[in-house]
Length: 234
Length: 135
Image (cartoon, rainbow over all chains, first blue to last red; front, top):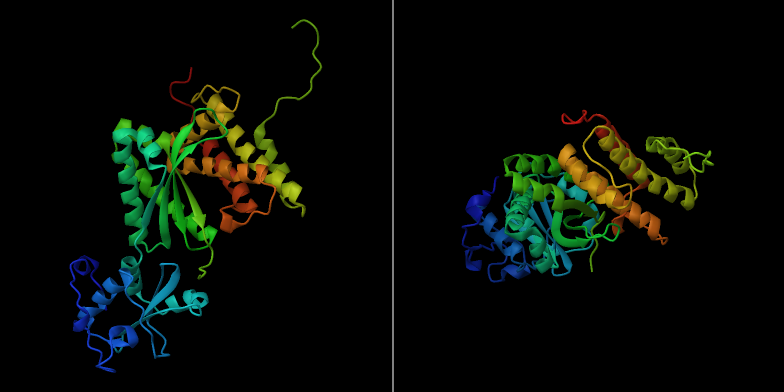
């Protein structure tokens, strides 16, 4: 099973298209939905939009698990590929088992997780960031954010958020720079390894920039990580 | 200077902080570990500054402005890996100024990470060649 994320973005989804064979009269929100392969992607569209609050009656081990945080509570989506069932629910109990569960996945898991993890970019003092960087710097920052997004999605990083922070350094007079804080939901060592992988890609980007753009990247844009070792629920 | 001055502090090769860092890190008390973290940063920062100076890349100010100077130049000379020096500085500031409990969930790297990173920075800087325009 493979979900083509390119096609997924064009998938139109209508709730009525999901065949609920177990309980035909019930709504999607109330039971397992047995769906065709084609609609699997659509389920993820729902999931991403935060609509899903399905309750599940199965205890079968899922083949794939996607866990994400939305609106302050955790949801996960289980996919049992043999019967093409998809289920989702808010959960506490599975959070601790997440790592074990994802072991059931195959290469498809990364494809699915790519879809399920939109990376939020949050600016802290955006006006100061933009003033400091200027128009060329804003362009460079955009290129950097693209690189982060691409590698994070492509390599299935547990990267939840990128905070773009203006920093007026307290230790050195008149030192201002932009800090990209990558907020991961994993342990520090793993997040640190991801950051080092990012360094390689940033160096590739740097080699493609003009001298002025390189100057901005090297002198004004710094990186750091925040690692939240375990997922917790509200 | 005609009269003999009384020497207060001899000149220092900052890489010699590293054995001291390792020794302090092995002690159980927080004061020793925090001092190790602090000195690990300074071992990396000062060795970088002095080596970049010796090799003809920079002319240092010998004051706190060098934090910026070194951070920027390491990113230029070492590529993105040079960013590690600024991360190490941030970690050191936290350890030095915040005497409360520090956890990794608050963003505080481990002492082991700080020491390893300091040693990696020193290693990378030591491998830089003499600047081609150095006279």
